[in-house]
Length: 424
Ligand code: GDP
Ligand code: IMO
Ligand code: MG
Image (tube, rainbow, N blue to C red):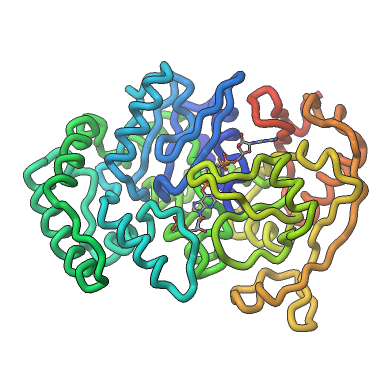
């Protein structure tokens, strides 16, 4: 029963979509287990580039079953649009299953998201997709689940009730009221199309596990955006770490074999919140341009900085990562010298532990170790031996500092620019 989990080890956008696409060559089922369409997972096949938000990144392999698990918050209108887009590009969506237990995001969650942000003293810089408010409704037990897509009358009744509740909040805030019936029409249209794919995915996933199929869980966001382990409150509203796969997919912990951690050779972050190794200079700008570091969901420029081994070691520990996939090594090709943050100095005290407090993270001065660059292209490498010695040394130091092993190296966005670390 080989069940593996793949998660991001930083603040998202590590290249999870690409890795999932590569790993699904040998996989029967891919399961997303948390988050929503705040995710933007890029897959490049040949000269084509696809960005996925809710649909698992196994969709480009027709034999793979793609499950949108119970732990997600799903905007039905956005999912309908995404599925249409995929079909228009010539791929089948027949193998997509949507958990009947998944919570749904509606217009009022998106409006509440932007209202929260506009009134906040500490803006989080959310993606504006309604993620936080939808998870809030799940926890306050007023959420509407995907199972109700199969029962339009009940769905309409619940939708109207929730719209009335939110309209009161919006009236108090002095913002525009929702046009409930117009919004309901859009939801019911999407419901017609999505209802046939709604099923009890907890059973289908567990059946696959029992039959010995290869199942891969696809994390969204990254460990440092986890609601418990991230840089709270500058986080997303779900458990992005590996434990979330059990609750968000409905599988027991003992069914898990490997936990893959996708780790960028440097660090990026979108939105607000502490980022100790952030670069505000020409090197930061260079990484942004070379790495094409602009949000796959919102298009926002990503903040860029050096690799932070303190943060990533914490992430590897919490996730139980035993296989690392290092991405974007090629983006460092041009640098004379590369820094790795090996410790923080917080208010004069040296630490290698990742602080829970935002104030401490904001005060943290990174302690850097400098490694020489390699100053040549790595994007044509197809095995570790093809890499320049300094690149191999850099990778070895990353692995040592985060206390895990590198299993895959990625030197470009395409499928063929990925190889096993022990490939000969
Ligand atoms: P995700 O959210 O973790 O799936 O990552 P994103 O898709 O948001 O961002 C990763 C970006 O880096 C995408 O544009 C990928 O096509 C690209 N990418 C992935 N791996 C590599 C790599 O090894 N080298 C380069 N240059 N780009 C990569
Ligand atoms: P993938 O899966 C990077 C960030 C937002 C914001 C915070 C909260 O592509 O790696 P939310 O809309 O979730 O309430 O926003 O989380 N964020 C991401 N950053 N990659 C993502 O997804 C993200 N999803 C959310 O920018 O800082
Ligand atoms: Mg992304």
